Image 1 (cartoon, helix red, strand yellow):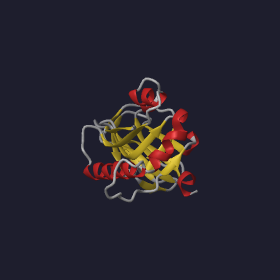
Image 2 (image 1 turned 180 degrees about the vertical axis):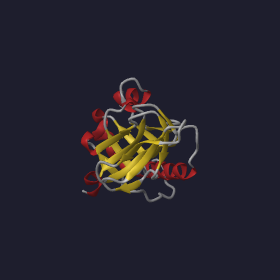
Image 3 (image 1 turned 60 degrees about the vertical axis):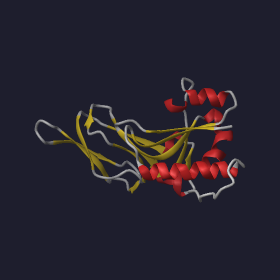
Image 4 (image 1 turned 120 degrees about the vertical axis):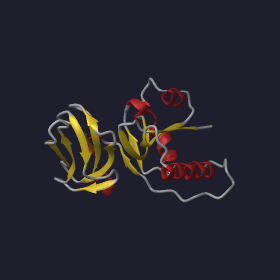
Length: 193
């Protein structure tokens, strides 16, 4: 028996379909995640896979549980839902639980190194206006977005990519405070190797 904890991100962010795995359960879960049709497998200690979660408890008691983040909170992204249904059917077929047709799955990018990630955080409050979409390849210096002062309409911050990579998270909700997460970039070397 195994479980999927599938949900949209929060209302502030858009995420590509990704499986987040706690390092403690990597050996058992990464092979399952590879067969589940996600774009990205992120092995780390994020709050979605830490001790306070139901998924962590299930994994700790021997019930494999994959945590999947995708899309935007409070919304349904049909293409991502279709992608996950294909992944579930494929994984069930691989585990001998499904005798029907097994859809082909994507080969996911896998990241285990925290240095592969760059977090874009707002340096000031205002309105975040993205210049790119998530899942775009960026070059060092590319503009990710701007923060605008809503009272005066002036640009107060231009956010740029510090390195080449793939933008796998982007801010959806426009209002930001200083420190708000506006995106995540996966270093190019992490997915080119």
